[in-house]
Image (tube, rainbow, N blue to C red; front, top):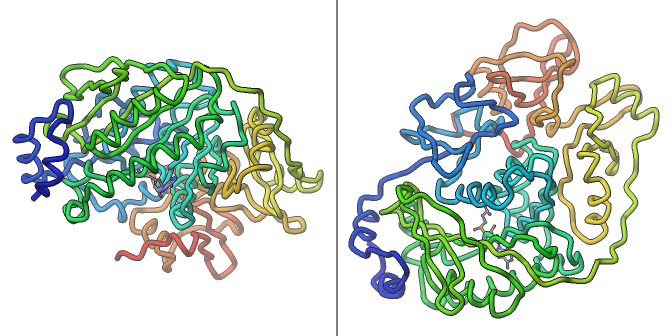
Length: 454
Ligand code: SAM
C-alpha cells in the first residue's frame, strides 16, 4: 500500500495517472533487466549471453529484459562482469548520450554520485575513448563501487571517494557531469515495499536541498558547452521539475530536449517557470521503475583552471622487462606505478590522471596489472577481470561447478599440468588467477568478494 500523504503529494506530477499507478504497485510485478558489457560480450548471440529469451530495452543498445530473475550470485558470468544488473528506466541515460554526443565518444565525464556503479559502467561503455571519474562520497559505498568497477574491467575509469565540494577546484574540467542524486526513492517503491513506510514530506524537502547543494558544488567544474545530466528515482516535483527551475535560475544553461518514441511510454515534462525539459518514468506506463532525468548545456564561460599535476612514478626498466615477459601491453596504454603496484591507463588520459591525483582521493585508477617481485610478476585480480587482451597467458576454462567453487574459494580439481600462473576463465571470460604448484592449486580470488551462497 502506498502512503496516502505520498499519493497526495505527487497528485500534480505531470503525466501521472493515479489509478493505474496505484494498481501497478499492488501487482508488484518484477521487471528484471541487465546491461551487457560490450568489452566482454560482443553481441547477444555470443555463447556468454545465456539468457536466450531476453528482449531488448528499446532506449539502450546493450540493455535486455530477462524473462525471470535468475540467481545472479550463482552465475559465474555475473562475477566476471559480462553484464551488470541495472534497472531499465535508468538505462535511458544511454539514449540521452546518443542524442547529445552521437559517435563523439572521447569525453571526460564525472559521475558524482556513483555507487554502486550502474551509471558509471554505462558511461564507460558509451565513452569508449573517454575517461569516466566515478565518485562516491560514502566510504563503505565507495568500496562496493570499486568492486563493481573492477569486475566491469574497463581501463577508462577512475574511482574517487570525495565530497562533491572537493571538485570545485577543478574549474572548467569536465565535458559532462552526471548527477544521479540521492533522493527520497519513491521510484523504487514497487521493488522495495518497506521503503514506502519511511517516506516523508520532510525527507523530500531535505533531499531537494541536498540536490541543490551537490549541483552547486560541482557546476563550476563543467566546461562551457558541457552537459549537465540530472536524475533521481523520485516522483516528487520538488526533487525534479523544481530542481530544473532552480538550475535555470542560478546558472547559465540551456535546457536540452531529447526525442522519445511514443510507444516507450516515457512522459516528457516541463518545469513550471522555465519550461525546462525532463523525462518521467512511471511503472504503469514504461517497462521499468520510477525515474526522472533531464539534461542541460552550460552556456556561460568560466576561467581556465590553473591546476597542478602530481608526479606519478613510472615503472623502472627492469620492472618493464618483467611485465613484458609476462604479457604484451597495447601501445595505447600507459603504465605507471602506485606504491609497488604497476597500473595501466589509456595513454591519452595520463595527464588528466596526474591533475586529478593532486586534488582527489583516488581509490582506483585504470587497471592494476600486478607487482614485480624480483624476477617474478605477481598478477593482480584487476588484470584477470579486465578487458585488456591477455593473449599469451596460460588459461584454463572452468565448468560452471568448478567456477562456482573457485568463486567460493573452495577446493576443486582441475586437469592441468603446466605450473605457474593460470588465468581461470568461464565462458571464455577471465574470472581470476590460479597458481598451479607441484602438489597444490592456489586460489587468488579476492577473499572479501568470495560468494557465500551454496
Ligand atoms: N548512480 C548510481 C548508480 O547508477 O548505480 C546510484 C546513485 S544513488 C541514486 C545516490 C548516491 O549518492 C548514493 O551512492 C549515495 O551514497 C550518494 N550520496 C549520498 N549523499 C550524498 C551527498 N551529500 N553528496 C553526494 N553523494 C551523496
